[in-house]
Length: 155
Image 1 (cartoon, one colour):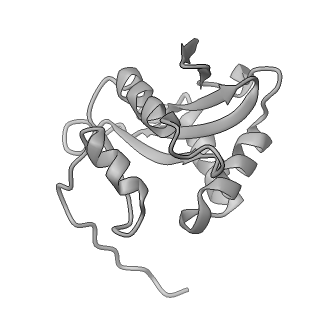
Image 2 (cartoon, rainbow, N blue to C red; image 1 turned 180 degrees about the vertical axis):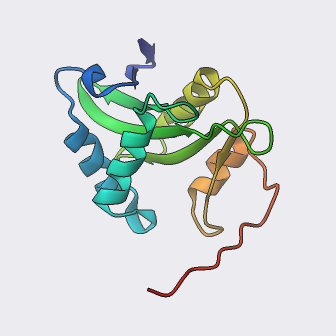
């Protein structure tokens, strides 16, 4: 499926076989790793989120959205299904990144609009308080419902 919005097309990718000819999983991983800035995870963690999105196991799955301008990757989203829709949101937006040279052009907003259109239930995301993208999420209708707390095991 391809949606064209103001010269930016958005490709939905749901399987390992679903990548358009000019894209690969490695290109998606590299893009996210390079454009998530200080909020990035390791390439291995990004790959795990993509593998989960492509899983056909019950309760798993999801999709990627790739924003392209003239076949150049300018934005990526990874959404995972939670399989827990009765007590936490149905989906979690794991990663969203826009090429740092293309920010402020509405690409993130277009990706968020398409995420909401593609998801069949509630959507959660985690954002650090100092992340400038927090304003985008709020403008797109997301609100803070809980403070997340974590206990990290010592290894």
